[in-house]
Amino acid sequence: MTVIEPEVLKAVAAPVRPAFIREVLRQAASVPELAARLGGDRMTLAVRITGDRELRRLNRDYAGEDEVTDVLSFAGFGQHLGDLAISWPMVERQAAAHGQPESTELALLCVHGLLHLLGWDHATAVERREMTRLTRAALKRSGMTLVKGRL
Image (cartoon, rainbow, N blue to C red; front, side, top):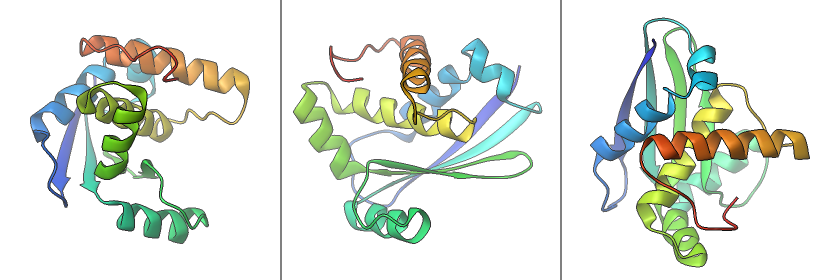
């Protein structure tokens, strides 16, 4: 079984322990469909918790969309699966809007980014259903469930 070794960098103040993010991603990687797409014995993954300004800049520079977003994923190579950038202010706003804990929202975004790095997308209804199913399965491994209507 492949082990994911996430490195977490908090570029903004956020009341979340890096160990929480590492554990969520490790648990997600144990979902059979995700594990099947991971190669090698050990993969690294970088997670950057940052602000709206940086996410907007990254979204503009790399995706051509001049707006803030919640999570972006950047594919890596070799034993480095890739990088995730997550806007902490978006975590706070989305958690409040959906009435769920910030930790659950953060876990959702981590799993969402991981799924993208592993090749899943949500451009069609079929793809969205599959990503939703996998997201729920991954979060369940960490003992979390999303509020009704979140996905």
